[in-house]
Image (cartoon, rainbow, N blue to C red):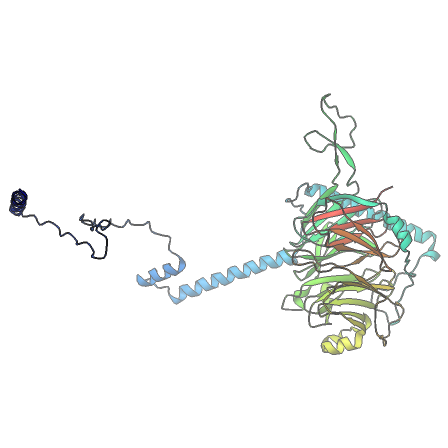
Length: 563
């Protein structure tokens, strides 16, 4: 039975093979299973023939780059001739010169007063011009009062010191500092936070307070060359606002609201403005000239010093360090002699510039007092011949400015420093700042070794210090600000109506107040202060405390004594 079935199947296979052969068809070979693999899991290769690959799509042609264009032109036999190459080079050089000239004019030329936007609540140019007119009128009024009082009582008028270095001592008696810690503590108890307002786009590097006793006006300079002005006189006072939060005029009492509308009060933020003071470079310092507060002076990392005159509505350059130094001599600090006619500035390359503002700008002189950055300079208000400087190379130095003469510019830096140096003090780290107080009898320095130091000096003495020049007071304070916070520089409160004291920022977002004996009398803080108030300033003429702290966010916090 099995044999017959096998024979039948054999016959059918032979019949099928003969039929396929007649059709001229060759079946594909079947792969044999691997001997090592299991018969249950072994699979044969596919018998389906592979498909031909699809033809590649032609991509759209790309815009040729300069390098490809050159190669393509060369391949096509279109190589530029020498004349064409020279013409292109001349055109590029001309374009570069035009750009340099444009930047030179923008850097050194006079600037119009244009208020800028970009900060919430910033007022416009017309309002800023009105504010400057008000500042000009304030100066005229105080000048007239001073002139009339001088005519009525000439014997009581104190003679102002000369503007140029004197041959004698050059000292003016301003009296000793009033160190009264208890009185200061009593005054500071009434001080509270009034407002924190962003007035300028970038990180604040410098501030100065206007001496107007009827208003609270502070100027600030930031990292991008902007200068801002904030009128904080009414900051913090509650004014009537609509229910949707828009501020209304607090002076209008005849506002007719609907009966169901709830009255909402909001703190006044004051008025603020900002404008481009320098060409996209840090405004390192701001000052108002002594006895002439209608002129705002500013220094910058663009190697210039400029002046904005409120009375004439002009802005002009007063020092250009590019003419002295081919490399970038960034201006870090400057100060005036007591008369306000002469200023001294220090720069990134160790230079010190003297400029008499009554002479042409090209009469300015420069000397090297170091081979590295000089970060701060302060002129003694009681002796215009004495200055103190703070150095990156871990030193503070006291100078006799009379020793710097025109002929001294031709001598070496070592000879200049040896002849003019009165005293020096060495630190373990870089010295950030050094300032005289308003009496000229104390020096306050800030250093990265986390100490504040105070020296007691006699402004009448201009002989070199033979004995060790040591501070009378050392105060522990964290000065490690990091990369994104402006450098701490302890600042004297210059008001002669207040006990001798100074302010400095605190990394815990405080504004610290110290007495001149080193006592910490206050940590001023508020929940509205969200950044370190690294740059500090105080009202220079009032008998009550008005303090300001500027931060890296462009905000200023205002503190004021409250009755």
